[in-house]
Structures are given as C-alpha cells and as structure tokens.
Image (cartoon, rainbow, N blue to C red; front, side, top):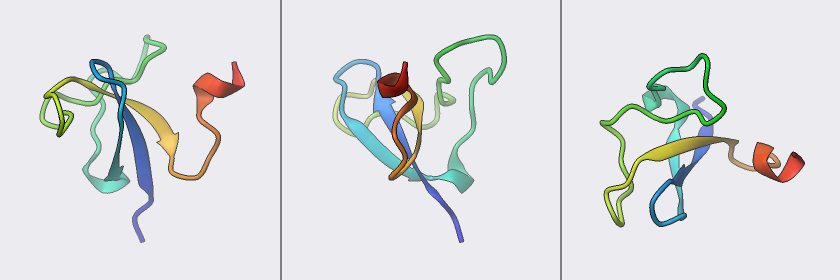
Length: 64
C-alpha cells in the first residue's frame, strides 16, 4: 500500500498530495528544503513542490 505525501508549492503555498511511489527528490542531500524533481509541479500555478511529509503527520516546519 502506498503512503500519500504532502507537498507544498513554493510559489502559491497550497498543499498537493501525491503517492510516495511517484515522488523523486531533486537533490535529497545537503539542503533543508527537499524539492521534488521538475516533473511534478503545482497543479494551480506550475510552481516547484517541496516535500512536507506523510499525510496526517505533523509537518516538520511546525515542529521547528
């Protein structure tokens, strides 16, 4: 069973949900913000998406 992941648009700020099986990170090491590769974009504005975490979990940005 695939886990849904919450992604946040870096342009308009909406949350987008994708199954974890289709998510690929651009550069998983060395950056605080985990950007998705350029194939997955915001459905509203076409902006870049950043990985927030699993759907239902407290997002990392609220814990800091």
